[in-house]
Length: 134
Image: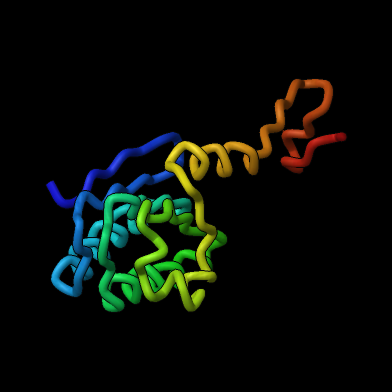
C-alpha cells in the first residue's frame, strides 16, 4: 500500500509509504487529497518521513493542493523525511510554504492546540441570533 489514510476528528492524515515519491505517484496523491477535500476536509497532514527521494512533480501536487485548501481556510502540514538533508528542496527552502514537523505526533498536536472549543449553556447562548453572550 503506497498511501495510508487516517481520519482523526476533522483531520485527514496521509502517510506516504514510498522510498521514492515521483511523478508517477503525484496524480495518485492528488486524487486522494481531492477525494477528502470533496468530502469536506480542509485540515491535512502529509507524512513523507519514509521518503528518501521526492520528485519535484510530487511536491508540486502538494503545493497545488495547498493553494486549493487555503481558499477554504484549511492547511497542509508536512512531516519531514528523516533524511531531509539529502533532498534539494529542503536545502534551498522551496518547501517553506508548508508547516513542517519532525514527527506525525507533533503535527497532530499542532492541530489540537489550534482548536477552539466553546461550550454553550442556556444561560450564555442566544439561540435566536446564534451568538454567544460572553
